[in-house]
Amino acid sequence: MNIAIIPNFEPIKVVLDDKLTMVIRPGYNGKFVIYVINKLGEYVNFPEDLLIYNIYRQKYWDMNEGEIYFVGSLLETFEIYYKKLRIIENDDYLTMEQYFDAPLTTKDHYYKELTLLFKGDIKAGSNIVKVSTTEELDIGYTVSGQGIPLFSFITDINHELKKIKLNNVSTETFINTTVKVI
Image (cartoon, rainbow, N blue to C red; front, side, top):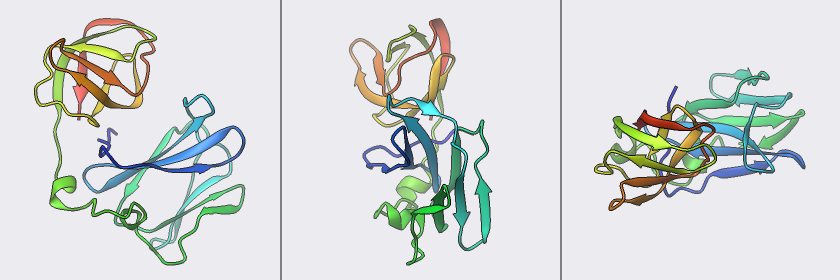
C-alpha cells in the first residue's frame, strides 16, 4: 500500500531502546503510518514485542517480524506497547488526528489523491532523481519506484535542472525507469 505523507508536519518520534526509534507520520486520505528506524535512520522491521492497540475496536495488532510499516486511520484511537510497556498512552482517548494537533481529515488533506508517473534516472547511493518534468510536484510528495526505498518523499525540487531530492538514498542505479509520485 502506498501512503502519501502530508508535508510540513513533524512526526511523532518515540525512542524504543538504544538502537530503535518508532516514527508516526500523518498521511493523506485520513491515514497515518508507523515505522521503525535504527540509529543510522534506516528503516527496519518491527521489533518483537511491539503491539498496536485500537481502543474502540478493542483489537491488538501484533507487529510480526518482517513487517516494516503499519497504516491506520487518523480518526481512530490507539495505544502502543513495547515490551509490555505502554509507550503511547491514550487515557484521554485522543484520535491520531488529535495527537498531531491539526485537522488532518479536512477536505484539503483527506481528499488529496494525486498519482503522477514520470521517467527518471537515479544512481545507487544518491538521493537525487532526474525526472522528465517537475511540473505538478511539490515538497513532501511520496515517491516510489525501482531502487527508491519505502517512505521516500521529495525534500527539494530544482525545476531548472528537472531534479528532485529525496529524504532517502537510492539502493540501485536505474536509467529511464518509472518513478511514481503520490
